[in-house]
Image 1 (cartoon, rainbow, N blue to C red):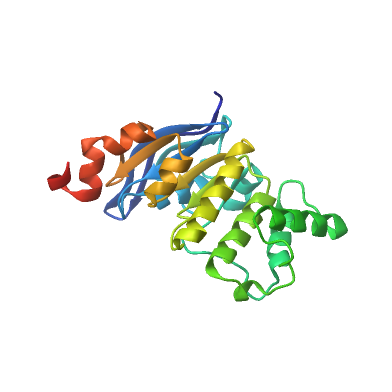
Image 2 (cartoon, helix red, strand yellow):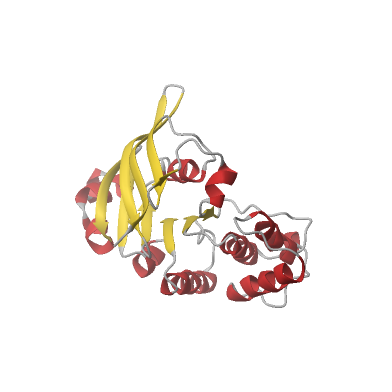
Length: 242
C-alpha cells in the first residue's frame, strides 16, 4: 500500500521537557491507525505537529511524499490534512451550516454561493445532521457539535483525517453511533489517524495501532497483538498488570 503519511525522527521539546522523542511511523492510504498511549505520552503533540499547530524541534513529516515540516496550518490544510480537536472547537454564534461553509470557503478548491450551500447540506446529512443546518451551533448537544466539527473537517476534502479523541465523552448509544460513522468513512477509503482511549472503538475501527509512552513509540502492529503486549499493558496499568 502507498504511504499517505510518513513521520521520521519527530521531536518536540518545551524548554527542558521532551514531549516527543524520535517518533517514526507511516500510515498507508486507506488505513485507519490508532495512536494510543496514557495521558501525557505525546499523542496530541504529534497531531499538533502534523497539522502545523506546533512546529517540530526535529524530524520530518510528509504527506504523499511531499514535505510538510515547517509549513503553517493553513498551508498544511491546503495540502490535504484536516482534523478534529480533543475539546470541540466550533464557531458558536454561527449556524450549523455556516460552520461547514467556513471550511468550504477556505479549502484548496473553494466553493461559494448556492453550490456551497448544497455541499454543506450534503456533508451535514452524511454525519447525521440533516435538517439541522439553521440551528445555532452553540445550541447543539455535545455529540451533535462533534458531528458538526467532523462535517467541517470532511468538507475540507482531506486526504488524511486526524481525529483527536473524537469519541470521548459519549454515552454508550452515542458511542455506537460514532463508531458506525467513522466506520462509514473507512468504507469510503478515507485515511485516518485516530487518537483514542475508548478501546471498544479502537478494536472496532483500527486494524493497526501505534502506542506511545513518555514521548516514544513502544509498539506498532496489528491491534489485537499490540494490546496484548506486556509493555503496552504496563504503560497503561502499571507493572502489577503486565
